[in-house]
Image (cartoon, rainbow, N blue to C red; front, side):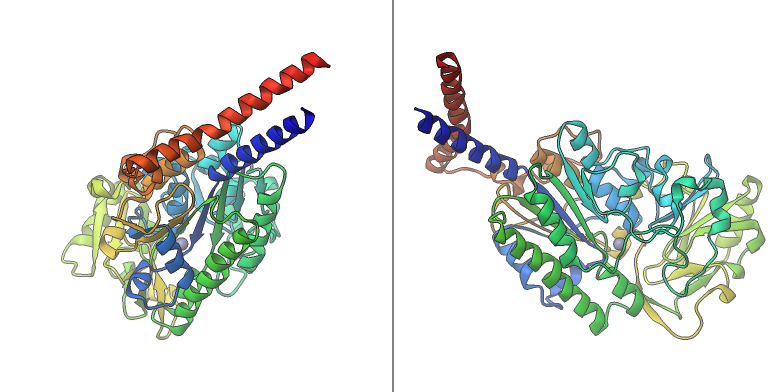
Length: 474
Ligand SMILES: [Zn+2]
């Protein structure tokens, strides 16, 4: 009898483990991976191709305005457009706080008040009793609560928790050549992706593994920014991501017999387009630079100015101006951008044509001839969309679905994790067809599925009954 009991308990635990694994979601973001190059077969990506054959592919998914890293990564985890989650750019001005947010390497990146408009999926999961893990996910350090497992920023010459935010403006002088211009505190982007995956695998093997894992890889974005997207270097960087991130993760999960048991989703946050020294718009040609602050420049222009100067600046930027850009007052920004109804949206928004950038002055820019990759233009203009590949027990096999919106990914992941979504801009209806659960089932197979799904309950009930009997016998 005791042997039978032990067997049943073990069997029910095994089923419980399988159920737990089946609810695991690993979201991998490969920054700046061009969906166009995958579609065109420009780079060799055998591992992503394998995921497409064995799982679900969308040629692209529609990223949010602006096609920048911080806004899109926050959208992945909240299902909200940037005007609702509040990370409206990589760098922005908050007129109520009277402070500037700067991504990644700046102390403001770790300041909770910039993140308080939304709750990311990992935090909701933890509040409902689950565990999460994040590896370098943009913005993860902005919440007072921390993921169950995470890798801390390793390069921190400044202790951000001891700095008065009002002092930060005096601590932003360029002290380094290149990117970033200075460092308050940041993660170690040079850590190889295989090392990151090894740590995630350790977390997954722990007694209480995470149900949600977010992994961020900064390539091929950083290579694209440095050298342009038509270079061998960018192609090599794409192929390295496929090999060292996608391939290595598949290999590592296989080693644990987990590859077919957990749900893995691969995305990028935007595409990239080349811009060059010959495609720059200089604000000094139209307006007095003393009147404005260009808080974010380049592929987007956030112009802040005193209220009584706004009309004059707008007129000067638009009258007889044939420059390749569109200039909006905040009230005229297209609703379809979902980038309008937030106090952090600037009173004047310069939207350069795709491939062009906006700068303050000729003196402020890099000299000489150059071509580099960039992103940020509204994705509906620039097609700066994301890739999407998914594989796992919940997903259909060999299915290509129509492009959908990035915001739809959040309700999909909540469904996989079995948690209640927070109010969001996405819709499960748009994406549920990629799940086995919603596939049209042939009758015979459907019966088998139903039987299997009852096995855990039956075993647990049996073993509990026996346990109660044994207690009463003791
Ligand atoms: Zn990015």
